[in-house]
Image 1 (tube, one colour):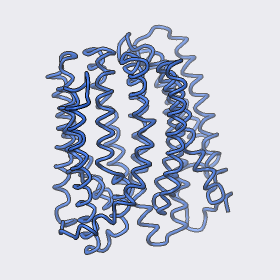
Image 2: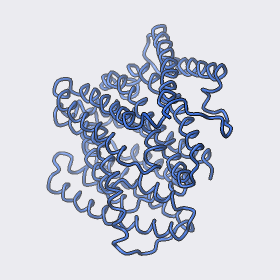
Image 3: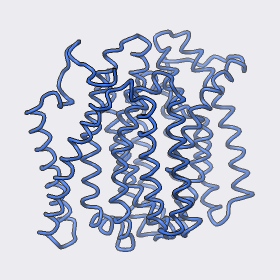
Image 4: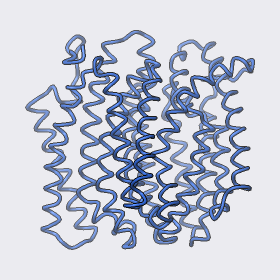
Amino acid sequence: MNTKKNAAYNVAYRMFSVLLPLVTAPYLSRTVGTDGVGLYSYAWSVSYIFVLIGMLGLNDYGVRAVAQVRDDRERLDRTFSAILQMQWIVAGTTLAVWLGYVFLVAGEEKEIAFHLTWMSVSCLCSFDWCLMGLDQFRPIALRNTFVKLAAAGCVFLFVRGKGDLWIYGLVWGLATVAGNLSCMLSLRGRVRYRPVPLRESLTHLKPCAVLFISVMAVNVYRTMDKVMVSAIAGTAENGLYENAEKIIYCLSGFISAIGTVMMPKVAHMQQQGQTEEIRIHIDRSMNAVMAMVCALAFGVAAVADRFAPLFYGEDFRYSGTLMAPLAVTLIMIGFANVIRTQVVLPQQRDGIFVRSVVSGAVVNLIANACLIPVWKSMGAVAGTLLAEGTVPLVQYLILRKELPYRQYLRYVGVYAVFGTVMLLCVRLTGRLLPEENWLTLGAQTVTGIAVYGALCLGCWKLFPGLNPLRRVKSGEWRVESGE
């Protein structure tokens, strides 16, 4: 399947994954309130840490390893089997430790945590890494979409109050297991499991563990901030932060969709020695991603103050105040993601990935410890901004002599200017239509899309070289800096 179709399936699935939580979030917010949202967020955050441990970096390492050998069926089967056996060992051990946490450590969230056990079980049967390495995104998208729709229906049917939060956890945990098992059916005929010696399986443990350090570091400033807000400022503050961060996290799914498709492709191209084609892909991806994330970041910042109370309810109005500065992280996430998935990981330079995200995690922990006691949930926002900014900065310090950063920063500057103009126009529309309702919000959204779209199309017409959709002939593309 070609890159465009993979991207279409993956982006469509990410769009669905973005929209579905946004459909259930208002219902949950109004049903269980800020304390309920905060309590569930805390239980989920701890559970997700165990899920990350159970997967041990496979979502990066497994994809790359499979992509590199997918043209050789014998090597593919052996690599898949060795990695799968390692996955069973790690995930099984993690599941046992999770159960110990649930019964011996968990407090108020114990009932929810027990039913979230299915999240750890899902690590035993997760095969997405293999399908993505084989460039098979269609079954992941279609099968998981159906399962998640069924799960959302169950949420509306059975979750009626704060006491039903365990049902919410159970539904999404079972949905994750079901989605993973359904994807397993898509591996038939493409790869075959054959038992291999334990020693061979364990050879994959070290490189997986290296990437796992990065995954856990990212989780520190994606999940631990919620744990710290709950512990320091209370579950109500965490509920406000959770709903603000949820919108940003959902939108970042569009960014990861492009990176998820491009990483196995670039890893395969790297194996084939297609250096110029890789650079073209990186340049065009950076251009397209910056166009997208600047639109999202400035758009969210422009309407956050009205969106939050309309969407979540009046109790969550402050979530809009938190959401506006958090939106800026989309630009940082997008920039770092392109470098990570199309330069660092395909070239097996995992140390760069580790250093960048560990630096971000350290900055985040220090900032959170200093700022959350003073600013509460806004302190967590500041910590996230500093952490997400640290990751691309460290990447730049290491790779500045190899990559055309001046060209990449030009994309950021151009689209940030367009985003600023859009934000001002959206705000002006809000002043002309002061009443807070969905009709006004819709008018602001249409205004933003029209202004940003017109600016981009006009720019691409005047400067065709900035158009990420144009065709580039072999030999035409040149690095402007970094060489």
